[in-house]
Figure (cartoon, rainbow, N blue to C red):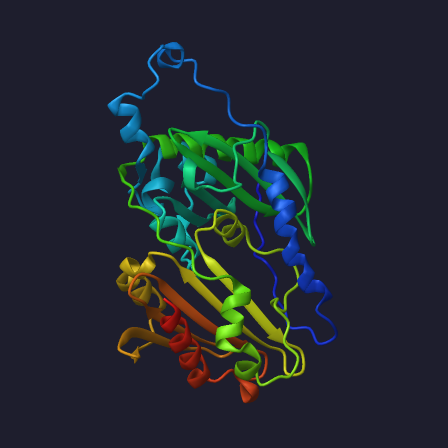
Length: 337
């Protein structure tokens, strides 16, 4: 059966932010992926009297994935399940946050199927837990199918959107989950670095950067203007506390401010700035890249430890979020780091 995922729909609305409460469906997603822990291994070491792990087991716990999304999707099991899909170019920093933690977030697309694969070291996967059964459930104006599992110290989740909730779709996401587990087992590994500290909360960041001044509005809401669920890639890395992502919006001119900080992400500066493109800049001596588009402006900044993305979105270019204001936000964020 051919299944085509539909991306999260975003459109500016001018009446109320009630739809923005769909962000809280993150809790619903967590319920979809939470389950009882995977069965304990029945290997001889499980019944041995020694309390300490072998050197091999200790090394395995400290390993993350060093493969790329292209490597993962090229695995025969996964290639067959996805219909020889290709990697989708990431737009934000969700995949970067996973890579810093020793995992992967891979969007993929083929003629038969589009979706997302997430693989994270089990001790850095947060509430993302292996589940015995994959399932499909209504999600705003679509149906989201999710399957999770565990493989060699990694937690793996797959997701795609479809239009109907049928057993065929559940069977498909189960097959995709199993293929992703096979691909993760075969993927190259590398030692994990110690995780960096998570940045301050969104409330604390909001107090420091003053979103109302950036958005030129007296009333600012701590949510994005959006309809539909938060995308699966963002939900998973946020639930695992691998990223700090904050949104603010105002309704008068329908403008938004977003701040995304990847702890320890400064090491990814080169590849992310190359991917985003834009114009080289500097913020208080820190490397920066500024990207201006029709309905948004972005500023990527390399902190001493973290990677910072400040983004302004707007419906009317005549009432755009100012690049100068984004620089001011970046300066405040650098001062906190």
